[in-house]
Amino acid sequence: EFTKSLVAHYINLKDGTANKDETVTSTRAQHSEEEIENAYKRYHTGKAEKIQEYDNTYAFPEKLQQDYLKAVSGIMPVVNLKERCHFHGVTVTEYLSAAAIYASIKAEEKPIENFVRISVPINLRKDFPSKTVRNFACDTTLSFSPKGRKDISFGEILESIKGETKKSLSKEKLQNFINSNYAKTVNPVLRIVPYPIKKAVVNSSQIKNHINGMTTIISNI
Image (tube, rainbow, N blue to C red; front, side):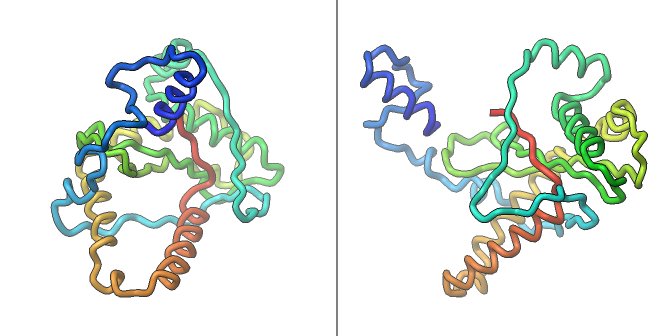
């Protein structure tokens, strides 16, 4: 939403031709309560079950650099992609995740014993309608373990993760994520911890969970 407004404002300053319908928020508009609501709070229903934590995750041999993100981007025809997905009976997410897993295995010179895990961000607004412009998302993970084999085929990986997206995106699992996320923000113990300490602990925990829980991330724009 911010990017759309920014681009529209730039174009209007340039020649005044930006689309001025209600799909683009004006820089002069007052925000609504819906835009700034905490959607996690709105859809929180109670106590959450423990979310699965991962280990034995393959990590690229490159060392992490502070404040540095390595991204690879690409553009492809959606029609062709969907045709391939339909042919194999998989979702677009599963097809691209399988491709990322396959590429990771083939790029590594040494056999990989651990799981190659691909994290995929999920917009919660589809199942839990909200107009909030605050963060309202979770992620799912698709994984495959080559168990030291180098002769893995793309089809084998695809078959292994087929249907996993539907399982991981059940409304029950998404609801559990919302409950878990919101519980952290209202935990009375966490609320009284001084911010510098809280920030250090959270950052350390996030780094640990990311390293243990994912090999890489894929997402569309």
